[in-house]
Amino acid sequence: MTDRRRSERDTTIDATNTTQRWLRGYAGDTTSPRRLVCFPYAGGTAQGFRPWAKYLPADVHLLAVQYPGRQDRIDDACLVQMDELVEQVMEALRPLADRPLTLFGHSMGASVAYEVAVRLERENADLATLHVSGHGPPHLQAPGDLHRRGDAAILDDVRRLNPAATEVLADPDVLDFVLPAIRADYELVETYRRAEPPRLSVPIVAYGGTEDPVVDEQGLRGWESLTSGPFEQRMFPGAHFFLLQDERTVVTDLAGRMG
Image (cartoon, rainbow, N blue to C red):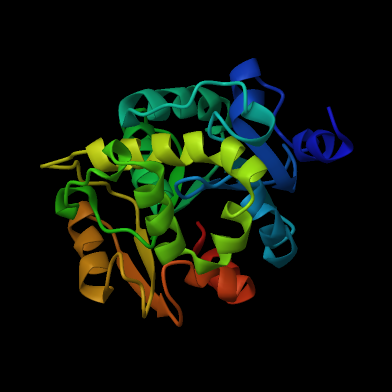
């Protein structure tokens, strides 16, 4: 294991092997009174949330989910069904339900975070807030078939949403590692359906980019119907990956709304 990978595990909870496998800790520790759990976008990794640590209050334990099939989990089979992914994440999160949990998910991660929130509420866990970003609610999602097409179609869509990834994806060696996970995530997103999604009782906060081609301000507002609690929405300058343009503002806003 490299030093980088070892440092990523330093602040994870040691409660179970599943918890260690699925979660990476980047700020705070097991004594922190509040926990923020982040869910990456399609093709994303837990490490993408590492920079958030410097913008969070000292009392927050920052954890990010590491989906299988990437980075230090490259040998683990990718998952293509939402229910299977969420059940395994839940197994990892249960040891953490002894204190308030705030969930944040961007793009695909918003859907995963919502499904985890549904299950946490069913189990009467201490769920504080759900933050969804760059993605509409499940009952308003249109079907897709990019995961059934060739590599070029998927990569064109990735570049459309994240032009900054163009140079990285041009490297054949990098592409060999990341493409299977990207394709699996696209299948998971495009086959996920919730015609009548359960309503939560916790607050939902929806974030979006003013130029996002995936979901606009009205589409994000659809999340309001999925909570009986407060709903808030904030738009930021930028496209689908607006949160990478000004991480400080996004994370500071999120931290100010945590329970």
